[in-house]
Length: 228
Image (cartoon, rainbow, N blue to C red; front, side, top):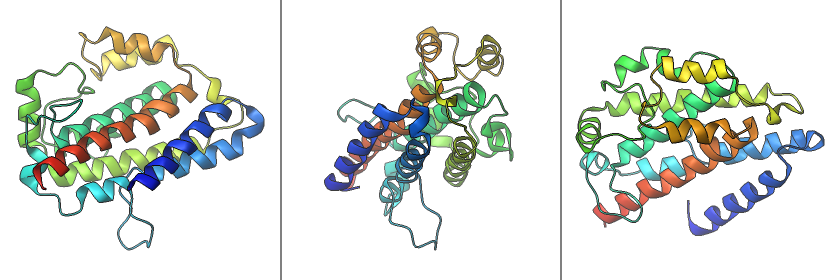
């Protein structure tokens, strides 16, 4: 994404924020969500689509750059692969447990094993030792496939929503699932508190769109610093 594309993305996100909970604007809001979401995740090879933010990040990205940790950049010391994994995990948890109340993508297609890391949680509150281990050990091909699968599942969930459902909230049972599946570290109670105050619309506006945008931006800063 260049600066013009980022400004457009931010403008569309602001428009979405003002209409997402209005049942009468459901169709338009859903279209904007799809546009914003598609612009963030990697495009499918050979489909002729415009390059996305993730496409730009992966383009000519060295593996040593992707795994480098720690990196001193504004707002983060974490590796590129950590940012990509963390943002996908947050989306997987919020959309599939708190949103649709279905199985996490992590537990489909053997992703928990294919990623080759022992971390089922969101990445919030990780120790520096664990971040270093993840950065060194995560399988890059599996990470790319996992992100693609998370994005595809999210779009299926969103396309099935009916007018008025953006105001729905997760149930205590769904939050209990987050704990039972160890999707968030027990030390990160603040994240449970934060999510409990969000409607489905709130999860779309942050984890699904803005949160991804922020972490891709942080990852791009790492790439630009290390591959000048």
